[in-house]
Image 1 (tube, rainbow, N blue to C red):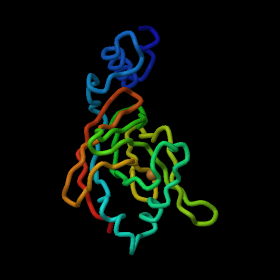
Image 2 (image 1 turned 90 degrees about the vertical axis):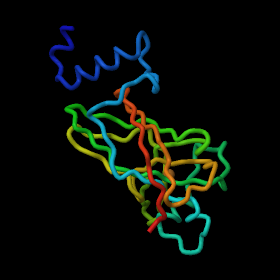
Image 3 (image 1 turned 120 degrees about the vertical axis):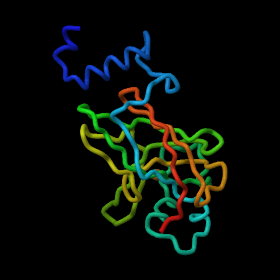
Image 4 (image 1 turned 60 degrees about the horizontal axis):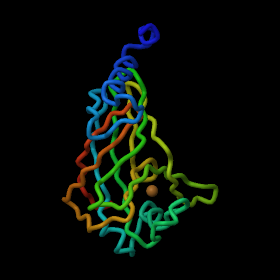
Length: 187
Ligand SMILES: [Cu+2]
């Protein structure tokens, strides 16, 4: 406890929360982990899948989705349906956190990854899986087309505007958040 006492109160709370729910192991079980009161999500949405099937008038972002770099995902069919989830993650706590995983349930997506879209020197948009997205203390991070996003791979059904998708976000602190994302067409 001596070590913990010298830490910031927010960090102490996280350490205690982790040790309380993880028992002897460091890894947290998502279903048993309490939602962090410091983390919240707003403006969550998922791009409709039908949009990218049309193909005719794709925006740069949709084209980027279609031309997705499947590096490291060789077990995925390149032609499999993919889409992105976007939101603002807010952290009211004194300690930064990191989004390290997300899931949508096997009935929605065969796999879910955290991605970053970047533009290379030839103005080509590329996406790549990343390990985490930093959520700053007393700040927020935006997941948006052309930037950070949650990638739904091997999508199992049509996602039409007005549908909702429930995503479970997992953070490095051990916190999880269930997010209801509305399906929207790309504008
Ligand atoms: Cu992606």
